[in-house]
Length: 268
Image (tube, rainbow, N blue to C red; front, side, top):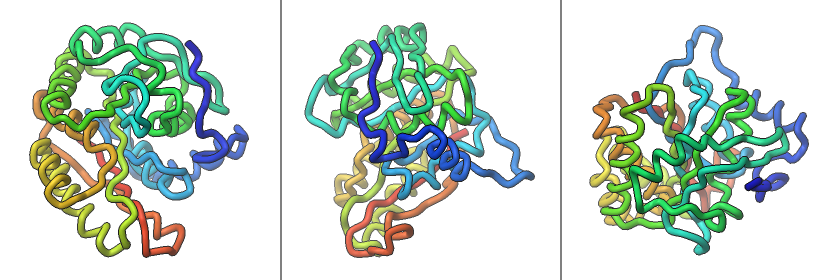
């Protein structure tokens, strides 16, 4: 299956030269900062003009492997609630990114809740917007797309445990998780709420993150992927989390009345 781009020209440039230049600009890194090996990262998935600098700051710090699991959210109510794809490629203006079939099949075997489903992925932007960054920064990578449309805690834990089972057998795979933080409240409120979610992410606490977002009404769209990621990291013995960059859409637009928050983090 060839999955065609759904948000090219809207979330990121459709012109390959413009897109390449923009990714390189966002992923520019200080010459004295050497990329490091990490187990996972958290990056946003908004339009590049708003969140690209956060994604770029994170990915530029990572010694990116050739195999990447992209754990995103299913924004649209179509397709399976826990959807993966195990073959084919995804097209962007920079070419085709191939799915890592053996890795995808291993995940499906470890987690029977994951269902093979293209419908959930067809219009979903959260995974797609990661691909041009990866195509520029780590050519010839292969990936596994997973879109989670559920916030049932037990199911998210099951996904996380399966991810840990697969990752424990492989040292050359990055778990790239994507989420934006609080949505469409004023900038001051969003920053307070986002700090509460970030504190739980820094504590590597999946239950704490889940309960905090629910109790504090933090509209973190990738809560499910983040809970699954933290569950996996706990099982793998990961103990370090770092906040690389935080921003809100107001930093670009200047409109502080209704913003979205973005955090870039690494876990090692």
